Length: 91
Image (cartoon, rainbow, N blue to C red; front, side, top):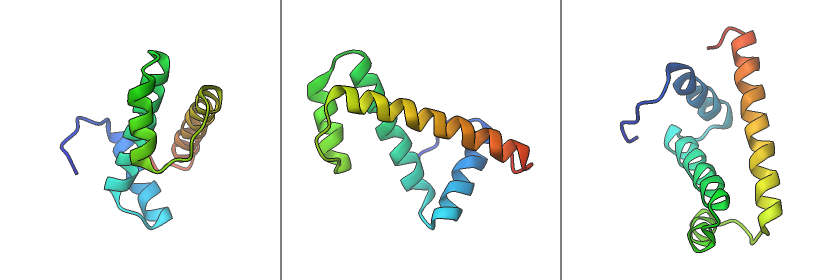
């Protein structure tokens, strides 16, 4: 995995997610980076770049509103997962 300067609670969450889903930590980070890029490109109307990320991540074509809604839902799910992990004392 690349050497990112990631907060400890995020690293713990990456480990939990990868172990629970039987996937590598690299896949968790790659998915998070892809979602960040989608959100960033949408915010700045960078649609050609957004299409590259969608093509690379194997996503089916979605319109701009669907992508925005998915990113908002994913952010809510991440915030909820962090809060639950903290509540359970995992991070």
